[in-house]
Length: 190
Image (cartoon, rainbow, N blue to C red):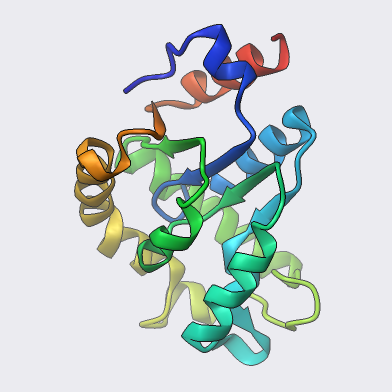
């Protein structure tokens, strides 16, 4: 359950789901991996969030996800455990960015500050932007979400890794940024 996989397994990666707590760096890691694998990068948040921070209806979200995964190669970025039957139906590997809480929370804070300061639109066409008020003074704060879900995500993902239902999937657990960099380097040099 670490990144010491055979060269054959690394060469065969075609469909990968990157998971981890909000702030762990899933999007950045996924984009880099997709570039190395020369595969489309699919961001689940982009499929889920509609303009005005409205959530996609469940049926629409799962239909959009199914359509996005209809290809021979992709790197999917996101958790959304209710989507496991769809997203893991043909996945080769699940990469878990399982960094310590201090690292994850610090990354979440830095990302939120940058997004709020720059007022960047998170997903094109949605108009959704993070603000200082939303980030630091709201019940919907991504920072509060990171705090609230960190331990539960760890337990859930660890249980999924050992679930016999998912025995055919290669699970890769990266526990530090150095691990993540080493993994990307090993894929890039294959």
